[in-house]
Length: 202
Length: 89
Image (cartoon, rainbow over the protein chains, first blue to last red):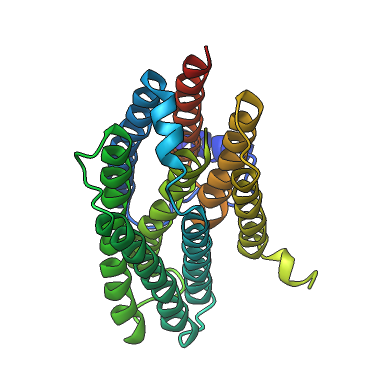
């Protein structure tokens, strides 16, 4: 009992009003952390490879479609926002709003993929490939690795959308929804670094 | 309007949209050099932190997880800054 008392005191001294709670399953957070470490290596590899030849990177960066990159940021941010609203709807037991907001999030994700496909078509059509130069090697591999994560995010959203339509997520029973949402937000978070790094910083 | 902004997710979305516009604008005017890099990294940190706290909802999570994700933003941002600083020398 003394131990429980101590733990309560420790919780009470935390700045958050409610007791700390990690949304979703613990496992998804370890998975997210592993993914983020992989991207951290890629992002810093890009930055340090660039420092060896900034002229080349600055020159070829100008061939990228910055408008498409910015539009895709807006799409991912808005997609993330819809998915937060889905989680909030589940917490207040607004059953109809949960799948609706997940679907809107997927629509934004689909928009991202369409923009990216047009971007790739333009680059590949111009004969650019992984072996063109170091800049394009990084541009293609980094954005394509992220592209695949958007696809996985869409698959996860499709799964939670199906569950949400069956009314699976209720107040206090949102772990699956929150886990899927957390992964989707990670995809957004990674693009928030990738866009300025590859498209804008010079 | 003010009522809508009580929802932290709405606030975060609004700031994220505006911040994305600023980064795009810095690209349009061809901002380069240390000040531009620092500005873009600060904007990216603010944006990333909003995603972590208000979208991933880690504001009320155990400190360890909040620190891990916010720490990731700081480490990645610092490595990028270091690499750009080297390239400017």
